[in-house]
Amino acid sequence: MIYFSKWKIVAILGIVILGLIYSLPNFLGKSTRLGWPEVLPNKTVSLGLDLQGGSHLLLEVKVDAVIKERMNALVDAVRVQLRGAKIRYRGLGASSRNVSVVILDINAVERATTLLSKIEKELEVNISNGRISLSLNKKGLREVRNAAVNQSIEIIRRRIDETGTKEPTIQRQGDQRILVQLPGVDDPERVKRLLGKTAKMSFHLLDERGSIEDAIKGRLLPGSRLLKGIEQPDAADVPVRRFLIKRRVAVSGDRLIDAQPSFDQNNEPVVSFRFDSVGGKRFADVTRRNVNKPFAIVLDNRVISAPVIREPILGGSGQISGGFTTQEAKDLALLLRAGALPAPLDILEERTVGPGLGADSIAAGKFASSIGLILVIIFMIITYGLFGLFAVVALVVNILLILAVLSGLQATLTLPGIAGIVLTIGMAVDANVLVFERIREEVRGGRTPISAIDSGYSRAISTIVDANLTTLIAALILFNFGSGPIKGFAVTLMIGIVTSMFTAIMLTRLMISIWIKRRKPAEVPI
Image (cartoon, rainbow, N blue to C red; front, top):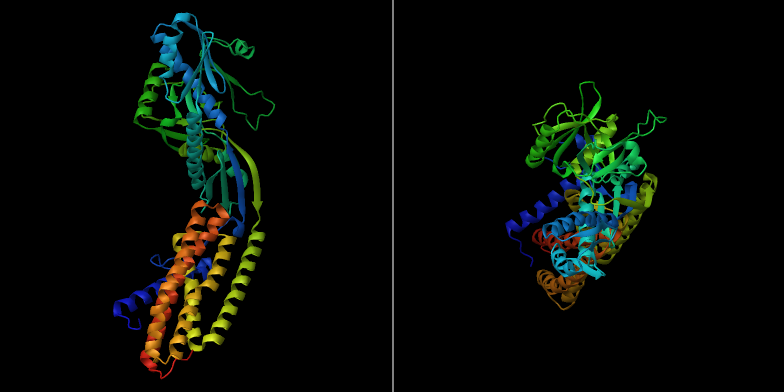
């Protein structure tokens, strides 16, 4: 156990040097780090919401809106099936939870039920006096809910990433809630606006069959929708314009592959968009067939623009204008690039953590870590002398390695994470204490220094591995099943366990081995 081959020595020293290099940026100013050569690491530990301030949002996905949309889509499927089978019906319509239809021929009810039950596997069919009601069963509702929440998390992550926010925490909480923590956000209102928009865009032809006045009075023609335009902030006294559009979607915004803010020929902010190949072909076909007709661009049930098609648009790209400001054009482009949310989001809880509170937490964490480190250093040197000094050097290296790993992985350090580091400081010398006490026993038994040290490490290694392995398993469980603060604690604890195993077993033993070879002591100073 005392002998070290050259490659082991090189590997140990290499890890220590890399740890020093990766941890060094945390002790330097930003201007110094920016002046470093690009080959050298310049990342620092990423601080969490509780340490640098920021926004905490608890969102709820309105799954009922997804189910209602699913029911509306089911109406068309039911209509196609019944018309294809030439089954007469009336009263076909959708509510928030089901679709119902009345079959006029009582003898055709069973045949209609068989046809409709095959539309989707997760449908539950109920029959009462010729009325067939279709709704999602428990499995279907669960799948819709899970899909909506998971897709919302992905879209939220894309939108947050587009704003440049580093290390956001976005995770599911419960059945249909999402926790969003944004460290260092200096404009939380803008983030709330971005997350509050569903950003479902579609292109519709205007319905020129009826009048807006009749539609306002409730006389809406089948296949039509009455939508409001966007409000102009500089024209508050002007009533919001209304548009009568065809319900059928001419081109869906799902086919967009890019959207960028730009300026038109009048130097007004606009959003330039581009479709994929399928969307570009549909867009070209629609514009080719409807030259000189108005074309409404709808975003979240609001008509943001309704230009007249002057000529076919064949390139699969176009522009959206709507009296935007530069920031509004940037935000709209961001929303369209990130994709549409499957359902609206409600903000249930909002908290803002000021940077001052985070600075106090960091100061308290530094104080606690320093006190813990000083007490451990005093104890080790008084109790074990020179060997205690070796353990102290290894402990300092261990802390630097933790900072290096956190910086390299850009893992978020939270206040519970600091608690994990403080705990690691105390635990890091446990392995050394076990080894040193075992060496003392061997010395009392009359062994020579080399034999006592070799036997002490050999007999203590299994106990050290077992103790740290069980703690590592507990930390892994905390990380997998815990929420944000608990995960932060588990991350630093896991990193600390691995680095302390390295410094206590490898680095300390290497220092003792070098000391023995140079000094050749007659007795162990322990």
